[in-house]
Image (cartoon, rainbow, N blue to C red):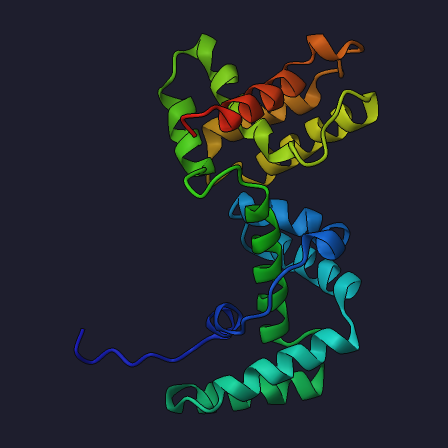
Length: 218
């Protein structure tokens, strides 16, 4: 371990950049990538989603923010050469640069985490709970993830349908990283949306979660 030399990569630069997501303005551009990040997706599929999200969110302002952040990081000795290389890549093709991809992925991760009901909420922990639950209880446990849709869900058919689509999407992207939870969420997405809100388990799960969060002990 004494021989370890820290060499910052694009993700390190993204984390240290200080560039923050604004859910009010960035959600539409980053929504699908955010769900992929929640599911710990990796590989070519994530690359494709990141490229698509970059094209949607890219602006002169974002490029300037990236360059400013890199300029500050370059002032740290260990960061100077990696940042110089990142800036050169940014000069060649700003949207295709590794640092751009990682910053966009980091913004998407922030967006996904903004929907967490509290700091201790963890999809991977929920996956373990689903896997350990008796078969008849797994759906009920998995539906705790519906709280992620609390921002947008209400009794309208369209909103409730969108919530199910999102849960299924998170499940699809998390099929390798959280398989037990993913199976249940994908199954929810394949079901028809109940016509009556009171019969919609997803909507009821969101309401139950919100009520629990509002309880005095919380």
